Image (cartoon, rainbow, N blue to C red; front, side):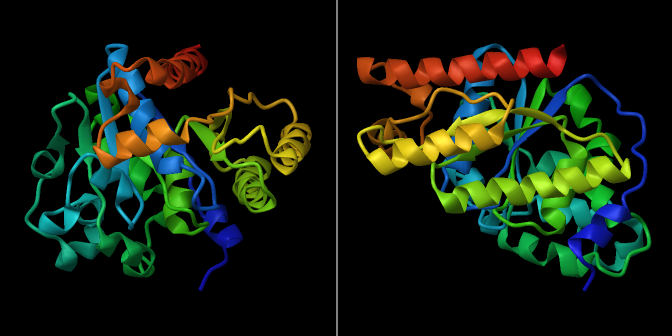
Length: 288
């Protein structure tokens, strides 16, 4: 099996991008940091600002899709579309079109769901001659998704495999959710190492660092405060957003499969403002 370094080394120079839509991903190699929840609410924050948003689920666990009430096992999903986009895998193609897979939600956000088959993506494409690392990028370009949407929000898996490399080669910027502990910190370092490999080898543009999102932050705990202070130093000049401490609001919203913007109670105002500020920051960073 090829190493991650070799996979990155194979990446070809990107083609000209069609459309002006921007693509961002939420990434951390460590799971349990609230990555999917952040992606879900960021998408709603951008939509609330009048943007046409597509949510693209690239995690075989398909939690992102589930938050929209979509059960990908009942229908085709992104894995089938990606395989269909590869001419060398024609025997594996299925009779499914993009418009049949995109799910329109009541919130006005469109969703390209994932499914369990995505876990076998790397093995399925192992023998192709075309650049395996650009499959997602080429799929987006071929279907003019940048022209169809103002923003595409991608939720990636907590791994360092081919799916993650595909995401990093397709996006314009990355947000990094984390919790203030050593495991989450190492997860960030692992992702940054992949980006550094790409940068040093000059194989494709490196996504913009859109900022770090501290989550599950309990300022009452001394250890949490100390770990956060250490991480602030190590993260250097990267933008660090206001820590999220609203566990109750997140839990209530998730239980109802709603975003924090769907609640009018006063105790949701702070968390709504946090996501609005992040969405404005992302838009400014990517459109500048």
